Amino acid sequence: MSWTVVYHRAAAGELAIQPTEIRARLDNIVGLIASFGLERLPGKYARHLQGPIWEFRLQGKDGIARALYVVRHGQRIFVVRIFTKKTQKTPRKEIELALARAKEMS
Image (cartoon, rainbow, N blue to C red):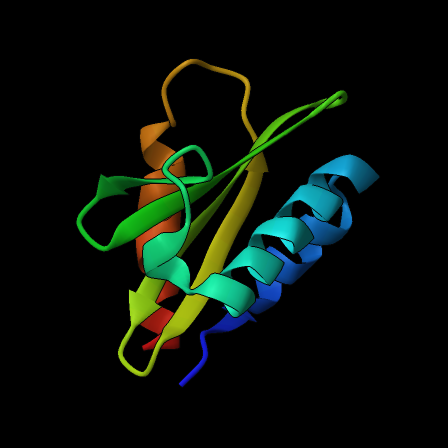
């Protein structure tokens, strides 16, 4: 069974306003997951934040962004929040928003 990536409706809109290079980086990560599986994705692309929330790390010449996601049964990844990162640490409000959206999608 292959991995499926699904975007929360708000996250899809957030992705649309990101710079082209950031969108391309996320497409690249999604392609790697489709080809090799999430469990074989190198750590430089993703890391655990809190509870069920993980993040894809996106960097381009226009800045740094994060795509927060949760993994559900059936090899499904739900991307619930995409934002431009401006501080060293992921803001608490971003994690809380991702948790709320994850509950909507379950």
